[in-house]
Image 1 (cartoon, rainbow, N blue to C red):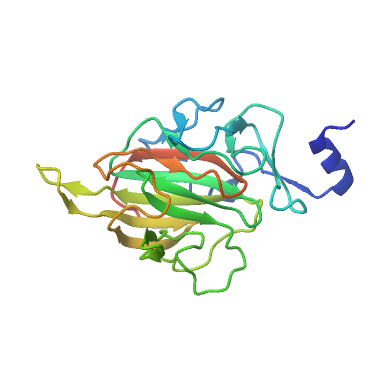
Image 2 (image 1 turned 180 degrees about the vertical axis):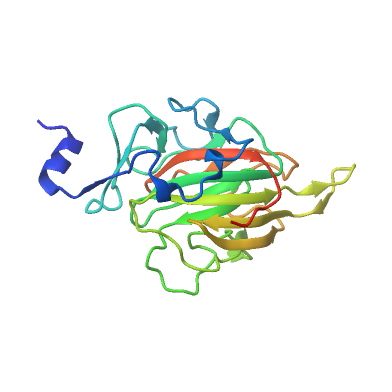
Amino acid sequence: MLPRLTLALALSGLLFAEASRNDGEDHGDAPYLTEPGWLSLLNGKDLNGWHCRPGDLANDWFTTGGIFYERLLAPKSLFPAAIPGDRLLNGRDGRTCDLVTDAKFADSEVWVEFMLARGSNSGVYLHGLYEVQIFDSYGSAEPMTSSDGGAIYHRWIGNQGVGGSAPSRNVSRPPGQWQSYHIWFQAPRFDANGKKVRNAKFLRVVYNGFTVQKDVEVDGPTRAAMDHPEAAANPLMLQGDHGPVAFRNIYIRPLRPIIVR
């Protein structure tokens, strides 16, 4: 019997394969290619440096050399290439643990690229606490909400959403295409006694080359945050249990002044 992926290729002919690593506009103006100080959080072969969120689902994340998108098999429509490599995929059914870095980071500049299946949902949590929403908002009518792609997600207080910041525009690409976030994040500040004296702030979020957030304070952890206190330094987290999502080219460096391109 033909392997499932081979059979899908033969029957539909509609499989969309990702572009190669140096594929120009899919990376946008990726600063890690030309600017110093960036640290890759992926080693190109395994999940060393990452762990599952404590108490979460089993770890079904895996690394692969390529991601394939089959638009007719929603929502389970992202498949790995059968070669090792530097892409991450959240299992074969899009429901696995949230993935957390072993390292902790303070004020940070983050670059991350991701691919969604149709209807999928994920998020990048700075400090494991403050979410930049990843969501298939392609084709959604404006105005946008704090649940759309590019949003700073809302908090969850009294069994309802509170606060959050909708993206200024809808720049989401279609499912199956690589997309990017460039995030400038300022950690909360604390006095000598450990009392918070300044909230965390997203200085800027650039989504697929467009600024969608600017100077957004978050006065506490957003919904589904990790269960640890706000601090000057904390890990990065990728949400893994809301449908198929793939990641590549995850880079971080200490926060630097914003350069408008």
